[in-house]
Amino acid sequence: MPSNAEIAERFREIADLLDVLGERFKPEAYRRAARSLDDLPEDISAYAARGKLRQIPGIGEALAAKVEEYLRDGRIAYRDRLAAEIPSGVVALMKLPGLGPKTARRLWVELQIDGPQALREAIDAGRLAGVKGFGDRKVALFREAATAPAPVARLPLWEAYETGTGLVAALRERVPLDRVELAGSLRRARESVGDLDLLTTSPNPSKVMEAFTTLPEVREIRLKGPTKSTVLLASGRQVDLRVVPAESFGAALQYFTGSKEHNVKLRSRAQRLGLRVNEYGVNRGSTRLAGATEAEVYRALGLAEIPPELREDRGEIDAAEAGRLPRLLSAGDLAGDLHVHLPPGAGAEEAADAARSARDLGHRVVGLVLPPDATPEGFGRLRRDVGAAETGLRILWGVERGWKAPAWGGAPAVDFVLLTPSGPDPPEGPPPAGGFPGVSTVLAHLSLDRSGLGESDPVRSEAWIDWAAARGIALELPPTAARDGLDSTSARAARERGLPLVVTGLSERRCDPKRLQVAVALARRAGLGPADVRNVSESPLWPAPELTPARPGPPVERPAAPSAGRRRRSRP
Image (cartoon, rainbow, N blue to C red; front, side, top):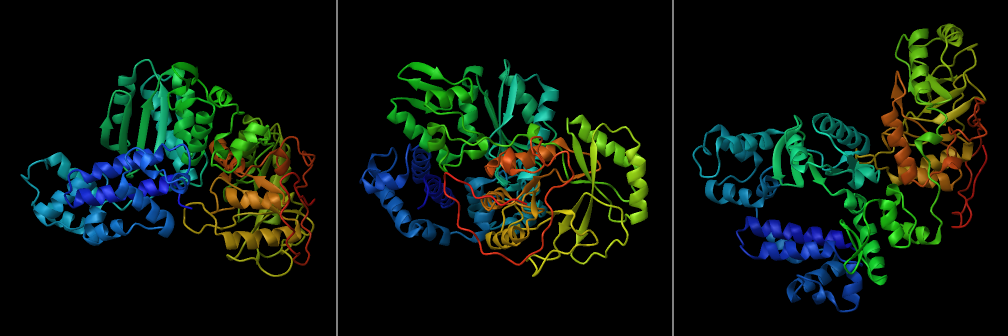
């Protein structure tokens, strides 16, 4: 069933198309209706079923018919007819950073510019010089937008996290901030992220806005107000910053974290309780009940605080009401990172430095992965020399081996093997021993990505989970979801099968706390707790080196899905 957000987006598309076609009043009607759909306390289908669509602000007879059409057919014929009247290049123009539908119309109607290529040629030919409203600065922005490669619609989580935390650090260097948090889908640890949202409190909002809009990363200022600014970065990524009062910070953080579906259910619940909840707080009439923290917002609604990673309208509100929210993994639960690559030619000092970086994070163990050019003799010397160094924690030694890697004859014992697939599909038969029979095995660098955005191909994911379940092999959950291991959806499926999981930072040379933080966030989104993860402090497997012994065997039949009250687990 189409969501409120989906239909609202179709209405915004219609508004943009009408702007390009020169309509004066209709676009705002569709945008007003879209805002109403965003704010509905329940699903639009419920209004349609009761015949109450026209009671929604901004939804008259014509728009109600279009809502019903979309609910029935999954499309709006009017939107398709409008799109057919406009050259596809003009639609591409209005999506360029800094242009929009009205500017695209001017370029099309007044200058016969019907696409990004035509815009570049017109700028080069000087056709925009002297055109009213198109000064040198704006033409320079047009040139940059028309020549820059189109930005990815969404960023993989790890890249978005790097961008967002970099902006926060840069902002803190420029201006004092009481609190600053990243919100939106990044905070919910979605595998891909669109726009970035920042929230802060400050006694001087105007200084915050000035510092934000003049960051070196900013290419264009789309909006600069007293408490909200919107900018485009050099990459074309949009970033919104809001300065909110301290007494509303929790409510604003909850609201702008989302998801929309989660917030719709919260508003519906608030209405049933005679309350009103929004980004400013929770109120009963004119009496303010909550707003300073997220915990008090949820408490005012009779709920335990719901972790951001679970806020997707997947039953988390009912679980919070019943006191059944899971205990999720935290970074402090990890005993250590099992995937820290040493560089080629690494000696004892490089290995000891990597171990010390893990110790500085409070870890008790670290898994150092030998460089690809390591030899049995070199490994023996490295293990002996590092053993004499003062690292302050236990070092586990691992090797990364492909399916066809030559065996290490007479090799000294390693503690674990990271088994790397040689193709997209699992092979028949047992996993290769690679010269290390009986050694604990983790399936690593597993490429499940179907989009380049960290979202796994469900068929490929299911096949690999079946393969690993039949052999008792642990699966890796890294920060670079689906590209190098599981994403949250696959990790949830693996947990339900009872597979052992290893959360890693997939770091080079040193343990990277940011990479571990993102991997932990993905684990939380998957609903993983400490009992589901092997490299945790409370696991009985630590500090012993065993993770899970590989046990070759024939494929087994997939077990039935576990019931809600009981989890099926297999023991390695």
